[in-house]
Length: 115
Image (cartoon, rainbow, N blue to C red):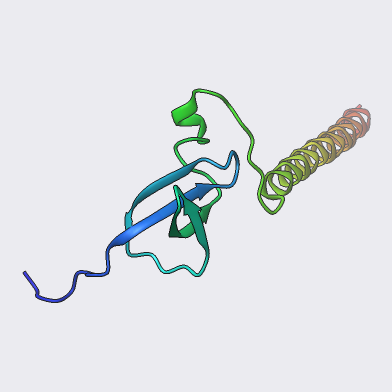
């Protein structure tokens, strides 16, 4: 194994879930400037958007966490794609109908000209 590649600055750090303010005290090497005081001791603080305390897989509840409007953007793209698909289908049926009408008119003129 290579020597001196693993971090050595492990220290107690508090991770705080921003959804429900749940805190976890664990050891980490993460760099942060925020601090929090727990039980009279000051620890470095890392804020996270989602953790096992708020993730639907672990809680068993479906909970929508929208950060920076990502869900709204996704829904808007889905609606735009559906509208574009419907418009393409509508245009295709109009083209097909007009082509079929033109073909039947040609067939009618061909039949009448042979008589």
